[in-house]
Length: 305
Image 1: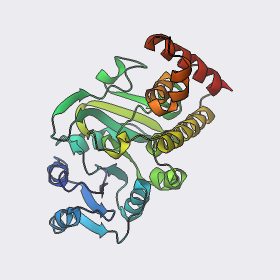
Image 2 (image 1 turned 45 degrees about the vertical axis):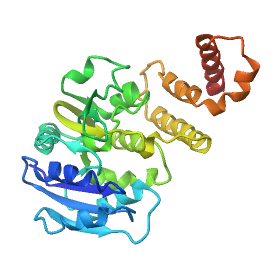
Image 3 (image 1 turned 30 degrees about the horizontal axis):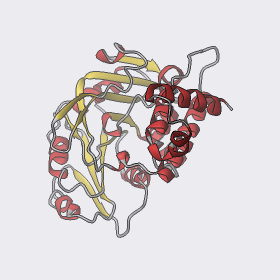
């Protein structure tokens, strides 16, 4: 079995850390180290992490003196400290099944040149209640996620990752350290979807594997950073979406054709009401469904241009 470095990058998740770390230390897999990182949390995260510092699996506890301003700075720090051949970015508010590492470690060893292996993800709320399977990829191919697969990376990009981030949570992934170090600087300036670009870049070097028989539990709750919206953030988010899709297009295999499925981006833009105030004023007679169809057609034309 490969040696795995488990990187736990934390910021203000003190209330979730015991559950997260217990799920890491209770893995039925023996060949791993744990790297604990804190990005100058303002809660009592440092104390919680310090209470685990003497655990025999913990190789590093690094408490930043100032906030880095980017999760990817912490990813890079963990990658540079890691001794493992493979990396698990165990984000500090998520949880893993006890067989997560054993299943994905066996998966990456089962075939030559697997760059990424990822598990089925379920959403949980802030209290740990299961919200169901994260079906972000089902829109593209509904039945695909019920069984394991190994796919060539370029093919995975051309038919899945080009449409949306079908690997929607970093905690679900085991990936090669050498590829992570090679591409971490490519996403350093991203704020919203750097992980999506990261998976595309890594997948371009090898195969992508998926296992539905072990689970990652991805925490989503109202105050999570990923759910915050305002005009400036939305503008920046869409600029990043555009950059990631362009990167995927650059890596699309010659001869593959698949109609782009990006209506979800338009829906997200329309859902942000402050961007619609002028149009709402100009179009009061139209019903909501008709107005939505108008916006969709408008934005599609703008995107094509």
